[in-house]
Length: 416
Image (tube, rainbow, N blue to C red; front, top):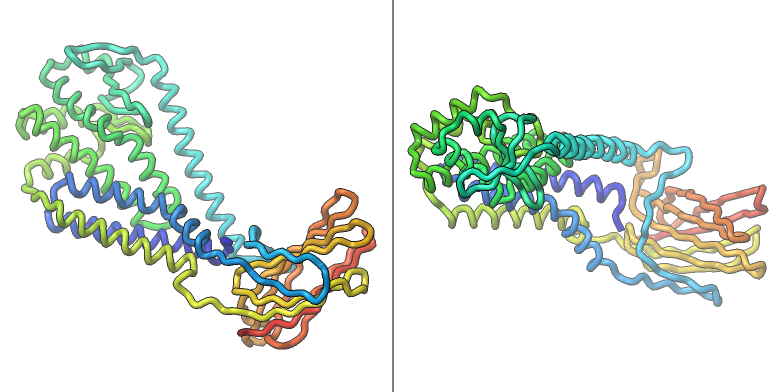
């Protein structure tokens, strides 16, 4: 079961992973590691962050255990994992409020990414395929410098103005650069990096990592272009300076040779870098270890679970219908299903966990209840809760006059 506290802890765990990736990536830069290793490290970090929810759900799934319930009559009882969170009536849940704001902010940024993709896709609808030499490209005047776009099958686009005025040598250099973006599926990786940045919009390192990653994928293609074309740093640098005069494509999801990091890229091409694949492997291993510990902590499987002995008497319209005793683990829900002689069905799901008693600062136990009253194929739902002292009887009561329904549960909770 994923509760609001667990979800909030998970978000901060992802933030911790992001900070670790930034620190390890910065260390690789200071050690003058080659762009090939840095690019692969950042891609590994992006995957780790995006797959973290899958890891969390897997840990929760395999950590669930059946809950045993005993009863002194024939009322059927079912123990199940909890599938819902609870908001106590007349009590403002700040945690849920902040999670709502976070979800809204992330949704807005994801929508912006989607609209950027649609806008770019529409602007390229009139592009025509063109073969220059041995290369198939797409040409139009509706965009500026050469770039690569497409998530599954990326294509290379050139404006007609450049095709008309550039020499074959300059065209070959620029095409080689963009072809490496296409081979590496860099537009897709850029989208994944933007999604991570959107999820961690409140974290400065998320924005810095995206900039570093964007720089490294351009730097990687610069390196491969120099290696394949043998054009030399001077001629390639002159090409980049010429392209700097062309307006930059504003789409978030394109990879463009004339991006905003030309000066840094030229300096990077002239500097000496060292291939350190072993160091890259060590950093990836550290990153994975940190992620595993953070996600395991968020899931709660590394913590010692508080266990409770819960005794409850259930009354419907002042008539005692069931008595239960549950050995439960905190944040694990149990269900009681009662069918009356009139065919009415009362499903009661409750969950217990530690919480300080309001106005007293004493150690207490909170019980959240999800009550579903089924009558004439209609479902009435109530969500009461109570914070009680251990080993003392407390009463949870729900009354519904129009439906002639009164539910009462007398409960005693103690820690095991």
